[in-house]
Amino acid sequence: MNKKDIGKSDKSLFEKLKHLDGNGIEYWSARELAKILEYSEYRHFEPAIERAKDACKNSGQPVEYHFEDVLEMILIGKGGKRGVISIKLSRYACYLIVQNADSSKEVVALGQTYFAVQTRLQELQQLDEYNNLDTEEKKRLFLRNEMKKHNTQLAAAAKDAGVVQPWEYAVFQNHGYQGLYGGLGAKEIHRKKELKKSQQILDHMGSTELAANLFRATQTEEKLKRDKIKGKVKANKTHFEVGRKVRQTIEDIGGTMPENLPVEDSVKKIERKEQKKLKDSEG
Image (cartoon, rainbow, N blue to C red; front, side, top):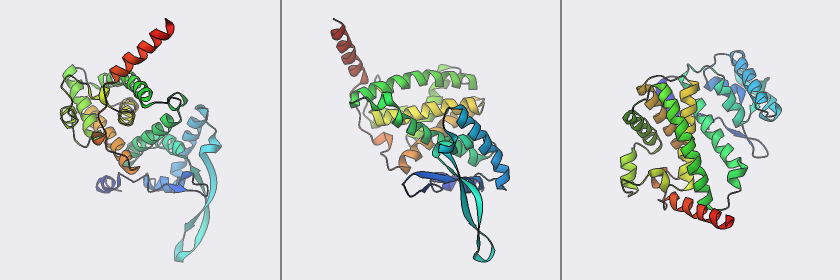
């Protein structure tokens, strides 16, 4: 698969491979994944699977839940079929496999970002602390605090990559916004959402928009570290590409583009309200 083909199919390349079993549970075929990741023979792909199984075990997850051995029928000459051993993979299994595949291939890099974003989305949905929050205000406050923490970590990762000066970091951040917001940078987002120059974009996002930006930040941080990105240009490109992948994921699931989500009152009002409640309860 050449770059042109990858560019065309990037949006749904891995989503197209997804199957649903009789219970409506999604899975991917290891043999199909091997082909799309440009392995000439399945046996060359098996070491990546074994490394992924080890990573799964080390993470405390049951390997058999994510990697299920199956007999798969494949076409042979003259319309015939024969059974071959394959594996039904969960989304998490795919995530681990692409992390352990040949990252020099562009399609593998795309897969790493795609499955990382999807897996992080599931993690957040399953996060007890988040799911137990019963109001939009509490979810916004939780996500905004997470965003602060991960923006600090992202800044450190960017600095290690060579983004040192404050103006360089502003350019770096702008690339992330442009990827996620369809080409809109911070100034354009401010203008579209009719925010004042002094108002921070993140403070006026709802939980859905904050979650999308949190995925952008965490995945960029991880990719900068994992791929040992060096140089401002490469760091900026990485941030843009991750932002673009998050945007494509939103589009794939039929979500609203972040620039079209409503503007909310400042999250600082919620912070003050929660602080007052805490003080009253202590008093």
